[in-house]
Image (cartoon, rainbow, N blue to C red):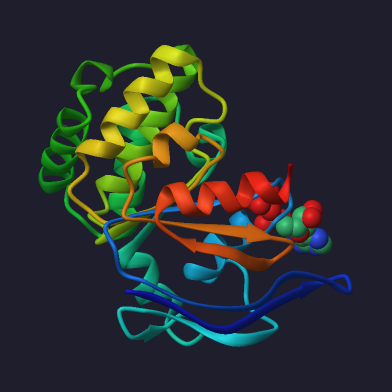
Length: 224
Ligand SMILES: Nc1ncnc2c1ncn2[C@@H]1O[C@H](COP(=O)(O)OP(=O)(O)O)[C@@H](O)[C@H]1O
Ligand SMILES: [Mg+2]
């Protein structure tokens, strides 16, 4: 469960989030809203990358402000641009990095990497250079980098925005197959269609919160 209570985020005198109170526990939750509405800010507050000016955020009861390290062990965040997430030259090296940082030994790390790649149907990419991968492959590798750390939930920031149709379909299928709760900020309304719940943001506030069709209709009406 992720809980925001009275969360306000102000930067340079602007309210990026303004009075957000939400509890999210469903397995498939979408976050929509125009550019600048606060989607990325909201996702970043969950793992303490952005600290609220007021209010607090809890993940499974852990206070993010007090215990960000423990929260980051539970929650994976896939940022919008996979190039920002991938740092090593090859897929295997990149996936090993986070595991090494957590003190996982080599053999266990190799096994986890193989499992994460297999789970996403990209075992063949293991020894490839990141540089030569397509956008969709990079997005899947970035997701594998999150999954090897064995989070209990994953946040996605516009996972399909930069992809062409075949890669978009691969990423959507990979997300659909994930046996973890997800919270996905997206403009890709088709991606969110079968979700349990969709939250629409507008200028840092909650515009709508409910079934996908309902939240999408409110978002479309707001920008009609
Ligand atoms: N550090 C910051 N200082 C000032 N404004 C910021 C900062 N970070 C983001 N913003 C602004 O906050 C608003 C919300 O941003 P964001 O959460 O990225 O929205 P979204 O992801 O929905 O496009 C945008 O107008 C953005 O330009
Ligand atoms: Mg954003």
